[in-house]
Length: 266
Image 1 (spheres, helix red, strand yellow):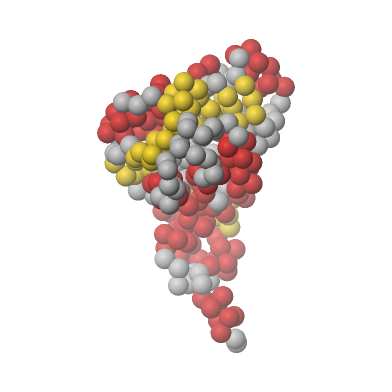
Image 2 (cartoon, one colour):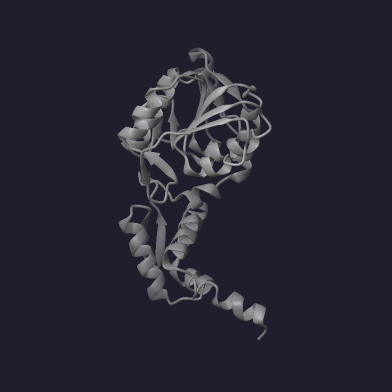
């Protein structure tokens, strides 16, 4: 057996359990279900090891175990790890980021939330001049650390494990002390009746303050979020000025946006 084949065979066996669980989680979000025997072969570990991984994912609220495998917990309110969210629908997020880049002008004061979509936005606006960016995203702070001529402001707050975000009262209070031209936010769900929702009160509370601080609020959501509802309400749809997405939703959504005076970019 060649060195390359040996390395390929052992990659799953040598992987840390947390890394393997993240890959399993990514797979179950893409395929909605996973099979123990298939995962055992894919990662070159025992079926018992995979069952322990699924036990942990079920304990964390991500999956529901079933005979021979597990299915996605569609009603789960637990936020996915950043690196799992990052790899989801990258084409859609890139399209949204390009559309939003055209909305940002030199000299703007803006807020970017800690969503993975906001990281794509940050990557796409580096050619702008003299921006002020306020964010609670560790990933965005790192992404923009080499940009000159900008003011980059971190909210401070409590670093939430696995999320690459700063949350809590300090983050929320910090945002309340600013006024910006535009805020760019994402969410876990957007519903005609329930409005804009997110996975927990900590995240939702920080985003509420972002909305209050901005003259114009942009909601950046890929098409998978339409018709979804999560645990914590961020705001009603009427508080959003512009919705930016990767695919046009059906006519009922467009009619509602028109009635509410919400601009729509796709």
